[in-house]
Length: 158
Image (tube, rainbow, N blue to C red; front, side, top):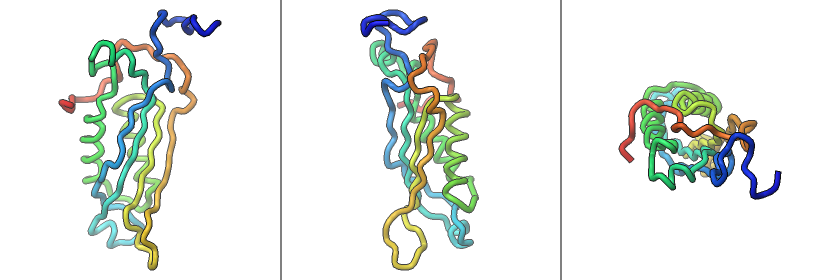
């Protein structure tokens, strides 16, 4: 296959493989009751989340059609609900819940997250602590069938 020919099963002029384009959500602040210390779970604290979804954006851009993209507003609202309801000990468990929720919304879309605890209760430490997780990287470079983006319940109105 030369550089001008499309991948098998894709029409010419349509770049619809995972990995070509990405949607980033950065700095989503969430109040959650997560932490090893009882007071962290009782009182709650701020976390900050960065997300990346690899999704072909050219079809949505050409058609100006949200249904051909991933509605990040739906994810933000769902993550805000999750953070209000969640109770767990570790950042790792919180991150796993985030990834599970995003997969329920969008299906097996390649994604990355970085979840930061804004103020870790460690004496003499004023930085942040974070976990980074990736899911469905094996799909990067694979073609995507774009009848519409994976259905998420409700629209964010973005």
